[in-house]
Image (cartoon, rainbow, N blue to C red; front, side, top):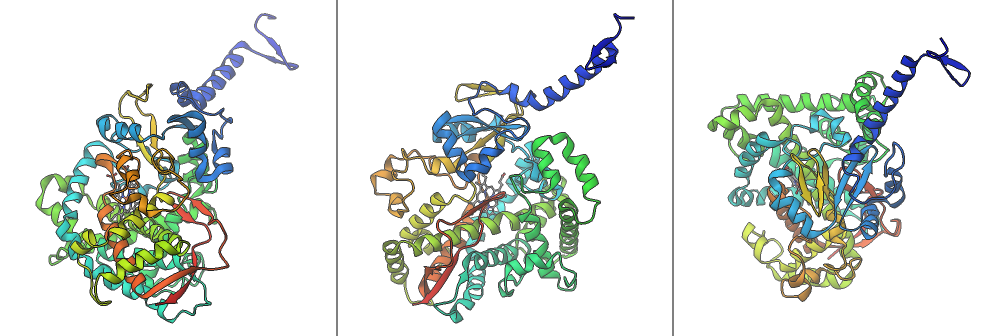
Length: 532
Ligand code: HEM
């Protein structure tokens, strides 16, 4: 009898109970620490139980990876809660991951904010393997230069109407330029993706429209602004830190709990999961309606992305199997998502940075004024060849405030990177933001100097070819790069022909950044408009 019972803290416990408890404890430990164990040889800071390195993210914000790269070198571990990320912070290693070893690292890892949002998973960004390559090839064929060139007049007319209000603004009045640019970019991509004029540029304020979504007087008849409200809400809730919904936080700490908890929480009115679920359901419903309607439309034409993709689906057998209705909705929606926040952030940062650098502003204005009469609309060819200084300003602003400082990838088999053998399923993230501030490639990295991108200057000639990759790298790089550059250049030319901008005294210095799926300005970019 004494042999069968053990005395623990005053309680008698049978060996089988003790064994079960120990096995459970070992199970929990191996669940929590298994992912770490597989990549433990890669250097990294000490790990906080459960939280991983999230406290470091809270302490340093988006700069955390630069801080760690200085300490641990070009490849290191960073734990997003339980999940280790292998951060690659070196141009040559990024080339290795993104190009040379692409066939072994061809998919993206799915972070918990996306895992909590089925709507976001069926776009090009997160689809995998053969489905991804079929989707990508079909979509690429829609981005022919001639199609992009044909979008210039549409882009121009949206830019003109979105910025019309600036004419009546007083020089003492604050304009939140980041709101204006988000409305503009969403309208442009809405038209290009869906062939729908959201008319968002005419709304009073984007913040008001976000607030509206939770209020009772949300007018269901106003389909366009309702749709866009859903979009903005859904997008702004995709948080990468501990400020997201409870299920997203659980996904960071113990992913196994994320889905069961999401299923429960989404049924409890008032929780963030409930709101996100309700929004995503409405958004999917609205998208499906648009898609079904367009599918039936035999005279849909070929102006917008949605129609083009449907035409491709009808003419190619492979595309038909891959682009089922749900994937068409997702990929079209993804365009709205990927094309709005990124381009708008970049436009706002350019206006902010130019306002703070009078010499850059002077050269920019000289180039814009030298192009031709104020009403001469540039062609796609003009945009590519006649604005070399604007090219440099855009590049330098994108380097200075990199909208997407991390690019997520995942190994699909065992692969060696930077001397470390990484098992299948390892999350490998490219730290584009660290590269962009590396003094070896960008001397005085915290100085805004567009001339460093002058093709004739030594700095540009000596730089590693993959040191500046704001649109990513290799076969999985951004598909909308040319689209957004065309939009950015047209916007800048139009704006600086008519106005210059000054920082508002009511704006914090330095600008506070928020860390969602892409970078954003926490309190917006506030400027004052001076008519030229
Ligand atoms: C300033 C604007 C933009 C920036 C900085 C940007 C940046 C990026 C980056 C860094 C990636 C990941 C690339 C990689 O893994 O190597 C990406 C992917 C992607 N971007 Fe963009 N983007 C911008 C605008 C756009 C626009 C306008 C669209 C749509 C019209 C778009 C659609 C996409 C899509 C669909 C992917 C996924 C590609 C794939 O996985 O095959 N982006 N973007």
